[in-house]
Length: 228
Ligand SMILES: Cc1cc2nc3c(=O)[nH]c(=O)nc-3n(C[C@H](O)[C@H](O)[C@H](O)COP(=O)(O)O)c2cc1C
Image: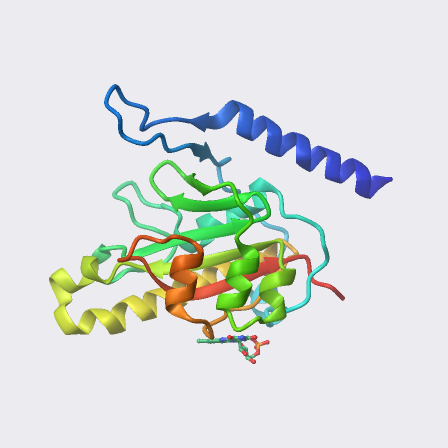
């Protein structure tokens, strides 16, 4: 009963967020495409688990229950990965030259969302469930198919190459590691679990999600409620 009530509350939350906070910022007089956005609730800055407890508990989780994540949980995880924490635009994860080459997506049963740190919101890229295609692109690793959400960390190398040239490739990949670890630790702090996945076909992930050609996928991170 409690589980049913929780699911109903989650569904109501998602509906109200979709109904109340879906903005259409790019709806203009000209014929450019309408891009829907969902404003995420402000991230919480207080948790029940200490950083030390979170570090001690982190381990890769590859089996999940069917329970969905709430939009608030998804927003918190996106914030942990790339949220803005400084007036000048500084984020939760460090970035070489503060150039911020990472773009984070999240695939759920309801669609594909692209995180926009400015304004802490997501753009709705698709309303299709793309996790099955992601699973195929990820060598059919079961964690990708089982997880209610799969985060995808991508990088736009050109943003960092402009300043750092050939050194940029190293910097961008290091940054993906920072963002991924933030996300994974935040998952633990929320009572969730996840695994960083590097084994996948880049081109297949790119086409499964119809990513812009300069958004190179670096990590897939399935997250969910751990199956004990
Ligand atoms: C760069 C990188 C790529 C990884 N790729 C995969 C992967 O494709 N599939 C997977 O199940 N785990 C993957 N992992 C997770 C490791 O298998 C895992 O971290 C390792 O076994 C240690 O276990 P722990 O995370 O529980 O401490 C990856 C980890 C890293 C750092």
